[in-house]
Image (tube, rainbow, N blue to C red; front, side):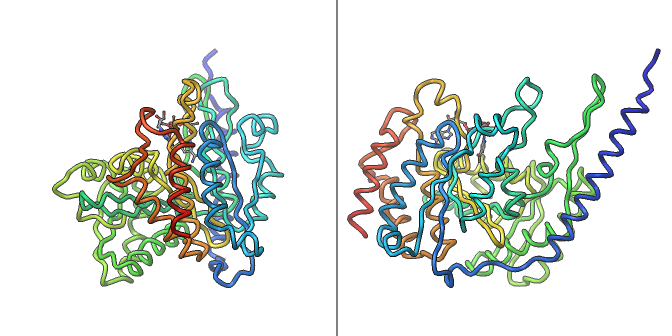
Length: 390
Ligand code: NAD
C-alpha cells in the first residue's frame, strides 16, 4: 500500500510548532537585554581554560603558558584566576549524551571569560551520535551573539574585521531538522529582529570607535528572501543611524570572489554577515592571512565571552602523528583578544607585539606546515620574547 505520509507530516508539524514557540521566547529574551559587563570595574576576573579535542590540548598548553607568564603578578595578587575546566572532550560528551555536559556548563558559567581549544563535532549522516556542536551549544547557552574575527595582512593592505552573527541562521536549529525517511530532509533557518539588530549595532559601533569608514552587509537575500531579507532590511536600518559610515550590500557568492580579487579587496574594512556565510568566508579570509592556524576569534555576548582559534580540532593531524606541529598562534591571538576584552590592555599590547615579532619576516623560529618548529619550540621562542618585554 502506498504511504501517504500523513502521520509523518503531522509529527513534523508538531515539532515545527514547538520550535516556533521556543524561537519566539528566545527573541523575547533578547529584547530584554541587560547590557554589557564593565570588566574594568571587576575586582577579580576568572579566565576559564578548556583544552578541547584533537590538537586542542596541544595548542591550549601553549596559550596557558603565555597567560601564566603575562599575568604572573595579577594571578599572584588574586586579580586574575586561570581556571582549567575539564570534561569538554568528545569522549565525555558522548558518554554523558550532552554536547556540553551540565557540570561543564556550570563550571563555564562560573567564569567571566573562556579561552577554548577546538572541539570535534560528530558528522551527520553517519553512525556517530546526532550531537550538536559544543560551540553551537555554548554560543546559545552563553548568548555569545557576535563572532568577531580580525584578519590582517599589512603588506597587502588587508585590514578586515568580520562580524558574524553567532546564535541564529542555520545553526540555531541545525540538529533539529525533520526527516521523512527515504524521502526528504528539511532543516530550519531562523533570523530574528532582535538578533540582527544587536550584531548590526556591534559591527557599526566597532566601525565608529575604530575609525573604519566602511561596513559591507553580506547576505543572499535574493534567494533566502525571508531570513536574509530580514537581516538585510534591519542591517540597513541600523546603518542609517551611522551616517558617517558608508555601508554597501553584497551577496555572499560575489563577496567570496572579492576576497581573492586584489583590485577590490583592500577597500573592505568591516563585514556584517549572518552565521553560515560568516563561518565560511572567515576561513577563506584566514587562508589569505596565512592559514587557519593563524586566525583567532571571539564569541562575545553581554555577560560572557569565549575566545578560540578559528580552526577545528584537526583530527587528521592527530591521526597522522603530527599534532605536535600544530600552530598555536591562532589560540594565542585569541588570548590577546581575550585580554583586550577584559580591559587588560597593556598585557594584550605586549602579547600583540611579541606575536608580531615572532611571526614576522625576521622571525628566527618558524612554524611551517610540519617542516619548521614544533608547537612547543615556537612556544619557548615566544615566551622568551615575552620575558624580555614584561
Ligand atoms: P580543521 O580546522 O580542524 O582542520 C583543517 C586542516 O587545517 C587540518 O587538517 C590542518 O591541516 C589544518 N589546521 C587546522 N588547525 C591547524 C593548526 N593550528 N596548525 C596547523 N594546521 C592546522 O577542520 P576540519 O577537519 O573541517 O574539522 C575537524 C573537526 O573540528 C570537526 O569535528 C569540526 O566540527 C571541528 N571544528 C571545531 C571548531 C571549534 O571548536 N571552534 C571549529 C571548526 C571545526
